[in-house]
Length: 482
Image 1 (tube, one colour):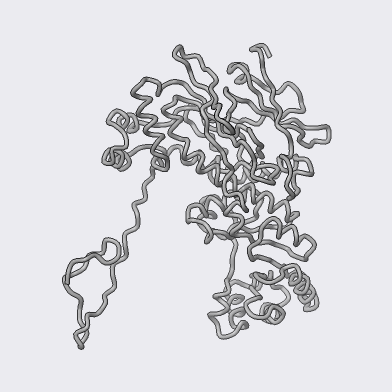
Image 2: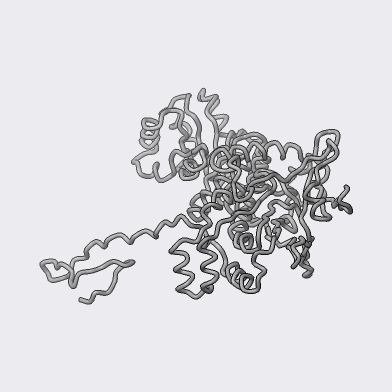
């Protein structure tokens, strides 16, 4: 027998052991080793970021002072606002955006960049400044949600990492906000891990909580970000047992009568009756995962009340989105569980954010505005400031985009009480503001979103197609004396 590999990297001996009849006996293979866990995130990027760097180092422009901005040209069809999420994850990743021996060896072995670029990357650390909308803030077309300022060399390398985080997290948070708004104060629970890749699942759980979700089924997200975790049992647990009653009794014995029992594996009416017989009228909740949820919820509520389980709640799941949640507004539902639609952005899996150079120093060191003029992809040159204007009733009426000479924009501050500035410092000279990272950052972002969503005009929460909730208005500063 040959030494042909079986599995991934699994060594074999020259022959298998044999049964008495001479047939070789299969032997268990060793588990494939897990991929090495590397602390660096520097290769979570596109090759052209590094090839641009190589060319810029060669022609002397790599160290020109630059300002990049992140914005979206439009909202997904039918959306009236977006929700910014992922800022904290960017700040957490920034100290790990370093090129260590493994990364440098890969780049060298594959001829990605030359020796000069490798030497630059070996000592790369972001030492610039980042400011932007606070995580959980709402945004509109053109909103400068993030500004990255530093040399071209250090800022251009962050493009892909920043966009990959913001586009996904903001898409999930935007969907989550629509769902929690449609829920009208009833808790919404995140349970979409199995519908996303393993790391995206953690990011989605984090973004969902920022958008107003009350908890997640994902334990890694719970540990990493201090989120409340939820979950009890699936249909498989009921099917494991000889009877539904035995399954319910086992679950209640293990988790207590405050647990949630899944009552639709067989017959819902019988499932509810069995659940109350086993757990008593103090049963925490029953879950419905199939059928006409609106009709079933009415029937189950009546049955629970007749059985004396007045405080037993009803949780509904099964491919919910914001429209399904809104359709259940009149039903006696206490909580919603959402999976697939949430982690896929409920039809808008990306926010279409872009990372564009808007200003760079000229040969004399003076910062000059630059902009694309491409059809349908034009951008506005120069650094921006942003503010939101409020009416006398306290609701937002306009998103103000401030443009003009760089010094004037940098120094601009609202001159009236009806304007709230939107840009906040996140990284100063390479130092990260710790208010926006880890569990504390998620809690702050969730609180912030609840506040700013409440400030939007009432029409902003409609699920029907329409224009952005508020218009974006340009404010041009024509003089340094403004």
